[in-house]
Structure formats: structure tokens, C-alpha cells
Image (cartoon, rainbow, N blue to C red; front, side):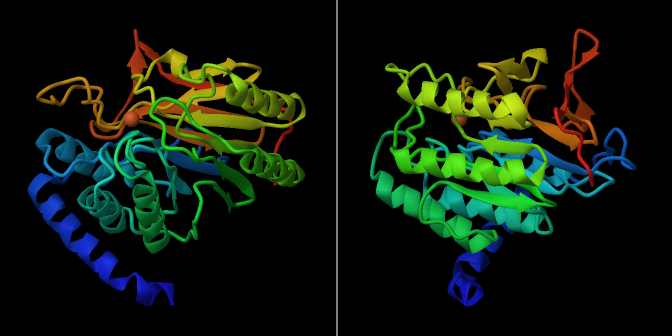
Length: 322
Ligand SMILES: [Fe+2]
């Protein structure tokens, strides 16, 4: 039923994506491999703040080149995560390009999208319209049924718990009581799985705009309490930090990961393609650890800082049984 309902949208997006790739695509790029494919139980790619725009040549080139290379891992990814701000102005055409490119270039991948402030209008315009536009595209393109911005997906028994701001603010994520209750219930399910859980939110837990700290405190309390006995990793975007050793932290009592912007052009006018454009993170789960590695997908390179690889291995509290 859904396939028929969304057919015109998918066809239109595919046509837009084909033209985008014809104009901006660049073939080639080396295949890459995870650290220990024989013993890896799950691995996935984390991207954020793609900021698709209708007319922005360097940005479009950066997106297409990066996505063309994300799938070049010799051991197929179990998922591709987008941590929000996939579009810049929440426009229909931006959604067509972004989701169309996913359909065209990542068609065999399991995609987990997160709503960002820019996907909901960035504090301007009609947020209800933009959020419903986002749901409509997500429902049409991925195996997800959304009418609110939070949901979870289980892949190989691992919980990916997606949070979403319910108010269209610019700098802070607003989480309702219902969503907090849902988060606690979903974490309880994840605890039963005996496997690490991944909590995805566009906003870092310590958002500077959360002036009264209520949301920050409640969120960090839930996650730090959970992390006392179970494994959980909080993955966010929003800040557009470039990759460095500070990307992977333990803060507020639980692991936090600050994912860079894939296009990293926002401060430039006109935007320029620099060596940090194309950055994302590869996460590999092993029996007793989770390894996170900074990678520049566009340049087909692991990322180094002063000669040291930008990576961190987190020991698991509970070794994974199967
Ligand atoms: Fe952003």
C-alpha cells in the first residue's frame, strides 16, 4: 500500500537524484575495510548535518562524492545514520535531493534518519508543515512509519533509539514528558537485549540554549543512570565540530560522540571545499568493546590528528554473548 502511495514521490526524487549525480558525481575512490571484519558483530556509519541545498555547487559536490564512497566498505555496513540537519531550509526540493540521493546511492542500506532543527525550519516559517514534510519523505523512503519525531529501530538485536525535538527551536532540543517516558521504556527493552544501545539526537545533551537546564538535566540523568549498569552511547550532531580526539568523550557520566558536519561549509561564503569536507564516523562493535573511528569519506581516508588516528575504543561493561 505504502509503495503505491509514495510511488510518485520516489520517482520524482530519483529523477532529481540522477541529474544531481550526473552533474556532481565523481567515480572512483578506494574501498576500505573495518579493523577486524572476522570478529566484528555490527558496524555502521554515522553522518550528520549534511545541509542539502538546492543551489550550492560545492555543497552538492561534497554530498554526492561522500555518499558515493560511503558504500565502499568491503564489509557491508549494517546501517547509515544521519543525525539531523539533512536539509538546510526544509524545502521540498532539498528533501527531494537528499532522500533521492539516498535512494539512488545507498539503496541497499538501512538508513536511520534523525530530525534536526533545520529540517523543521530552523525557528522560521511553518514548522508543522516542515515536520510533516519530513515525516512524509521518511515514510516514503525508509522502512519507518512516523507521525512524531522519535522512534527506535532494532538491527541485529541492537537498539537505535532516535530522539526528536518536538518544538521548532534553533539551538535546543525540546523533549516532552511523553518522549522521556518512552525513552526510559525503550532503554529498559535495550537493557534486556544485553547489547549496547545507541541513543541518537541531533542536539548535544548540554545545549547552550537550554537555559533552565531542565531538559539537559533530565536527559543526562536518565543516560548516566543507565550507563552505571548498561552500555549506552549518545550520538549527536548540531555543533559542526571537525573531527578530533575530543569527538569521542565520556561526559556527564556516559559516552558522547560529537559527529562533524558532512559538508562543513556553513561558515564560508561562498562555501569552499576543504579537507574536512566529507567527515563522518565509522562505529564497529566487538565482543567486549566499541571502536569509533573518524573517517573522511569524500577523501577515502581515516582521519589523523598530529599523527594519531582520531579514534576511541570504549570497553563494554557487559561482553556481548552472541
Ligand atoms: Fe547543522
